[in-house]
Amino acid sequence: MFLEEVIKSILISYLFTIIHRLKALMSCVLTTKKMFLDRLSTGETGKMRIWCNSPFMSVIRPRDHLKAQEPFAGWMIQKPHKVATFFGCIGKDHFGEILKKKAEEANVDARYYEQNEEPTGTCAACITGDNRSLVANLAAANCYKKEKHLDLDSNWELVEKAKVYYIAGFFLTVSPESILKVAKHASENNKIFCMNLSAPFISQFFKEPLMKVMPYVDILFGNETVSEAKRAFRTDDIAAIANKTQNLPKENVKRQRVVVFTQGKDDTVATVGDKVTMFPVVDIDQNTIVDTNGAGDAFVGGFLSALVREQSLEECIRAGHYAANVIIQRVGCTFPEKPNFH
Image 1 (cartoon, rainbow, N blue to C red):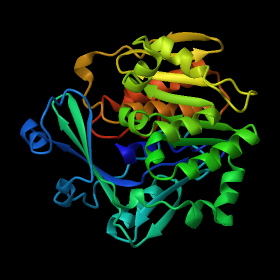
Image 2: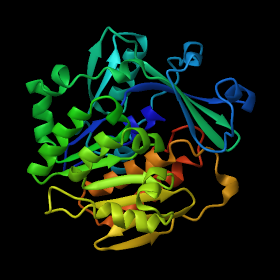
Image 3: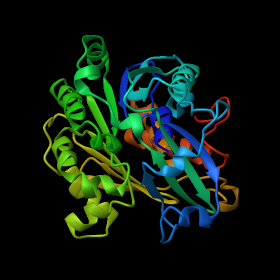
């Protein structure tokens, strides 16, 4: 899941360069039985669960033929290639080499911080019926160092050239100072800074660094599991939460914050100007759904593919819905050679 968002949300664009930052993990997808998850933790598996630094990842071995995911946004746009840059941390090992190779094949300009302290992180998406759970050994993904990578002139020059930035909330657990440096640069130069809430535990346990970044967020992505926001705003109404989140303090007043919450098969909620609007997802026969893993990430990739072409919010959401609709009808994070999106 983590790698899916890393790669699929990287943007290949005619108009802009994007800097994307997240935890870099080697990922694989497994079909499992409930008893496998019971060995990790007790309780219901009806919702996505995440286990970090699990000893099970020492026996789950991604292999060379397990392909890292191509960029969904790049797939939507098709050309040109390598206009996007990704920053992350990996180990100097076999899995790190696989990530570099797959990023190259996907035409992603990956600028990794490579270190020897920890091996490249790994993540298994365990599919149990219609549910999914993530088992991760974060390892090198937790070792990103601002002063050893982001602050280097050669890397910061890439940041300065970018016009759109996308950073997932997971990175708040690693280097919030890196996020703030990029976010402030975007705000001061009237560029677009996007962030994803990623998972409920981010807003629950990393609320302080999240709220430090929030004033700089131009586009915020999330889903219906915004439990901390529900508590903070004392409402279960997703539309009301989107509206209240939009109105949180903001540094760059030249850009009104846009909030986008996906809700699976239900309408996507988004702030359009001063109003909250519901956008129906693509109608689909539920029997054709094969694998929902990575659907949210595909949505973001599709959304950004339209954003960098300066299309309307409505078109950005339509592109996101299309990309998500494609992936849920295929096994794993795969897609056809070319999109059929007009």
